[in-house]
Image 1 (cartoon, rainbow, N blue to C red):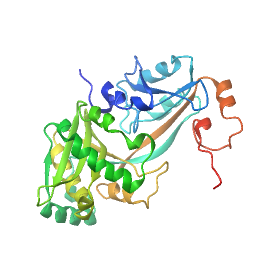
Image 2 (image 1 turned 135 degrees about the horizontal axis):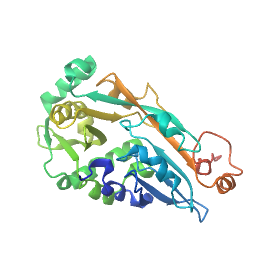
Image 3 (image 1 turned 30 degrees about the vertical axis):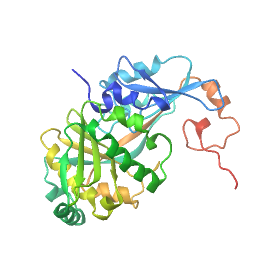
Image 4 (image 1 turned 180 degrees about the horizontal axis):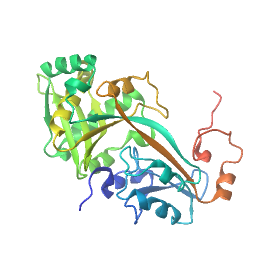
Length: 304
């Protein structure tokens, strides 16, 4: 059976500029192998934003049989991982710790019943001004999407892997299971787009981007409302992810937006595994102690 979404090897391939994809033969997941700055050594991370695999029960065996030249592995688990975290925890030398709560929509419940009144008002208002349509061939929207995403990069100062390149998007828009939707205003201009990856019973919110006119028209509310309606029947659940940053902040705008669609959440976990303890200790010697993992990649504060 063909894999879709984050499970499909093409998704990991779209992130190849951040690491060489390494398939895990037993579980069916993929890691990204990357060079450690200032060193000849290598480590690995799960694909952004989530590590998914077909058989979670086989992941411990995969971790135990990784190449010996890797120093460490870090990954964020799928909120719909079909395994008890306590069962998986022993596979990670430095633990499997609760990281964030991801917001979930149950599509068997009407948004009229699950969404808050604020979101209902904004969705109705936006839908009166915008037309939402699914893009039959997502790859055809590459140029428009890239332009909208440049606006997102500029607005939020995105850096690192979440910045994505045009080349990365060219691959992502071809990954099986992608559902792409766009909103047009009265002039026919595309003012916002949302991308989802559908895997089995779950549609994972991947990315969204809007033009200045899209922000003003509250296109996000129109798009999410229509996406939920049109994906109903294809998937049971929508996984919206969490807020921005490394911690869950109930007050940040993105968290409020996602929480407003449904009260349901599922946790994701941060898996931290060291394969070479001696080299790991050597690499982070002299760096301040803290919770960052791997410690040798912790940002170093500079004095201006």
